[in-house]
Length: 396
Image (cartoon, rainbow, N blue to C red):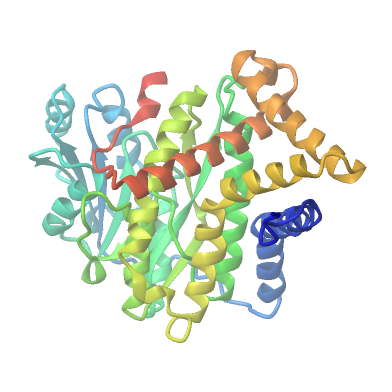
């Protein structure tokens, strides 16, 4: 007796075709449709760019764990930034450092520099909570020990607070590959140029949905203490939004950061960042109510949730292409996907990116999405990342 309830081959092929086109549509929306929609909306929104005027008092918080190799240079560069000395303090948040980080910080005689010892070591977010309680400035600026700021970065961040409804301001990442041969260098630079463009559009329309972790600021009166396993540069701005304030992007406030020097380092960092980001979004369910926060809900789903689901869409696309490989169109689509993934794998095994720079793009794309897939698994397993590992220090 035949099982009539089982799907036949024709139905399976129809389902595969529908799945293929849905996956393609979602991928196109994530990477092209959403940014183009923002660009169209931004045409109808013009905001006056503020100029540095009356500047608020400011506390620069530098999270540091075993940063003896670079903390001296970081402090020297920070002390040269163009900001009134009487309105600025620098707090180095030594998160359980066991090397000479503390001694180096204490050797600075400039009264603006303060060492804040954080014990026990519970990670970057906890250290920032600890430092925020001890800061005196009206504005808190968060930085890393490896980041170099543009001389006027602080002025550009601070001038946005002339508008009373601005609660947080993000600066702009500018990544660079000093040797020009990092396997993730070109991909990182391209990705962050793309991200900065999206943030510019979001800010022009209304508010951004996340900040750049090495250069962002918040009014001290609006700062919310977060759980150690939550990524602060994504969730802190979301709490500011929940309190009724805007979060803006200031592209003139530049922070220069070196790209990672290995794919493994980049992958490890992305898994930690994305897992903490996913967990962070779970902590702000109110923002996913479109009747209360329509713009932010739209942004979080389009810019974060769907992007983190891209590896699922890619798997569906490959599986649907394989199921229909006897049809020429889907067969060639299958070959294109295989060629793309092979290019990424070859770039891992052989330094082909040094000769053909564009091969760095598929490698970085696959690294990002493999990390997102593992992050989804880690989230479902209940894994929490609290301890902050400064992976870029290894290559300095």
